[in-house]
Image (cartoon, rainbow, N blue to C red; front, top):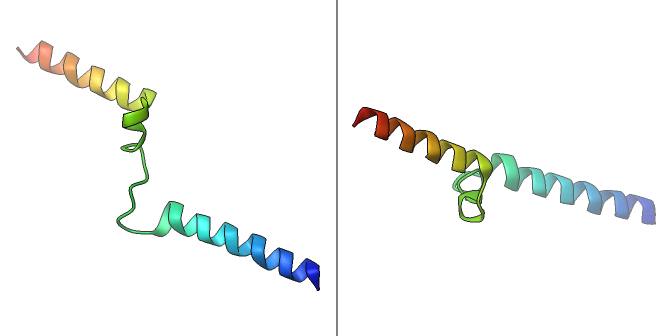
Length: 57
């Protein structure tokens, strides 16, 4: 019986995290959050934008 309860709790947690991470609309996930922390992908995109604006001038 305890195995079934434990499996239900684990499965519920996995489903809840999957829902929050991938399916919930209007959440703040994604690479925009790591812009504050310093995501290398965001930093590279910013550098490319700066280089493009410098070349255009």
